[in-house]
Amino acid sequence: MSPATYRSYGLELLMTAVAVVFLFPVYALITLSMKNPRQVADSPLAPPLPPTLANFGDAWSSASLGPALVNSAVITAVSLLLLIVLGSTGAYYLARRARGLGYGMYVLFLLGIVLPFQLGMIPLYKLVDGLGWLGTYQGMVLFYTGIQLPFTVFLYTGFIRALPPDYAQAALIDGCDHRQAFTRVVFPLLRPITGTVIILNAVFIWNDFFTPLLYLGGSGKETVPVGVFSFVGQYVSDYGLVFAGLVLAALPILLVFLLLQRYVIKGFAGGLKG
Image 1: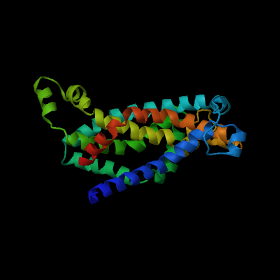
Image 2: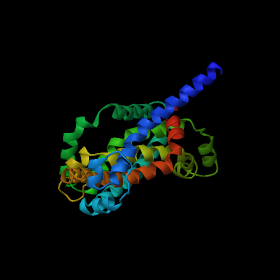
Image 3: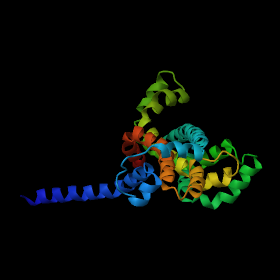
Image 4: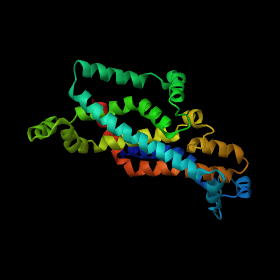
């Protein structure tokens, strides 16, 4: 057997070991969510025999995960819509204006990525409080749109720079204005990077814990991470119920990722080219 074959087998074994390491937490999460307290105490990591789905129904009703999922879905969806509209249109201008004002604005957006948002938590909180938006959807949407917009513009700008400008110029020659050229010609070509923008921003917004706790605490509009946190503290002794709640909380964003995963590598690689 040649050395190349040995290296190939060794690489396959290494990748298999890495896959097992990454899949083990998922296995433990699903296994524990399908066990009753006695099964968890006797053999926590053994396959559930027989499995039970009662924990999911109990977690849904006991933790009020339904309203929390609705709150997270509304905040995430509206924030993503604004990020896509503002990020793509702003990036289109910046990508086609590589000098002067366009370049200066692009540098400012890059600084928005580098600087940690925690530096502005107190002023942002006072701003949202002054607007009367504490405990509301619009306060959270404003926060997430502002925080994630620099990263979104960065991704879109790099991808648009990699596109030939001939498409938009042809639309302008045919009588379209710049808005029509962008919406009808350029934006449909941004589908890969738009999928990447949706996934990366959705994961951040959906999983964020500190900001909803600060802005929505006690309002009855808490998002999934805050709801799961209170749920875990209340039912910490019933691990089957706790892990069932965690599975329900992670399932929506996991489905979004599975539907859009083919755009991640292509779109993110296109964004890095710029």
